[in-house]
Image (cartoon, rainbow, N blue to C red; front, side):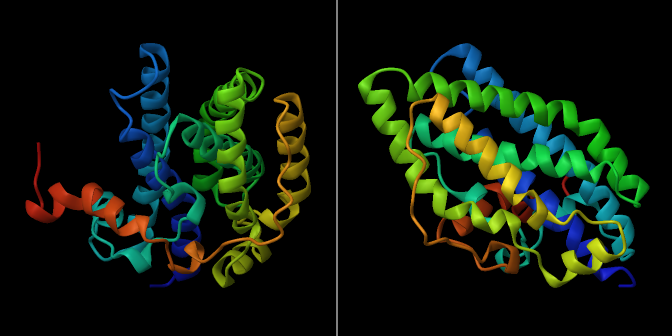
Length: 251
C-alpha cells in the first residue's frame, strides 16, 4: 500500500468513533428516559456517519477492492487502533456519561484542528462533523454537571465513574509512528499539543459539577498499538456477527 501511514492515521481516528458508537448503540431502549435514550442513539448514529466517511476514504487508499464494510467489520482485534477509553462497557449511566464526556472534549479539539489538514478529504469530514461533535460535548457535559451536582447518590456514582475512566485519558495524546509522519506532512493533528487545553476544560467542568479531579498518576494505554482490554473481543463479536455469519450480505 502506497499510503500505509495515511491509512493507519485514518483508522486511528475512525476506530474511536466506531467503537464508541457501538457502545452507545447497546443502550438503545435502555436509557433512563425516552428523551435521553433517543439522544444517545442519535449520537451513536452521528459517530457512525463520520466513521463511514473515514472508512470510505481508507478503502480508496487501500486500493485492494475492499469496501468500507470490510474495513469496519472484517478486521481482527489487533488491527483496531481505537483508544482503550471508548471500548469500556456501559456499567451504569454515570459510566456512560463520564466515558462520553472525556472523549467528547478531546474529539472536539481534534476536529477543530483537523479542519486545517492539508488533506482535503479529512478537512471536509471534520468541517461536516464538528457541529455534531460540539453537540455531543454539550450533551455529556450538561449531564455530568447535573449528576455531579445532584443527589448524594448521583454524585457518588459520577465521581466513581470519573475516577474509573481517568487513567484512560492520557492515551488520547499519544502519537504513533504513522501519526508523527502525518503531522510532519501537515495532514495530521499533533494531539500532544491539545493536552493542556483538554485537561483545563475537563477540570473546569468537574469543578462546576462539584466533582474532584482524580490524582491517579498511573495511566493505561495500548489501544493505539492494537493491544486492547478484555472487553474489546466481546464488543467485536456483536459488531461483526452479521457480516461474518452472512458474508457479503446486502439488504
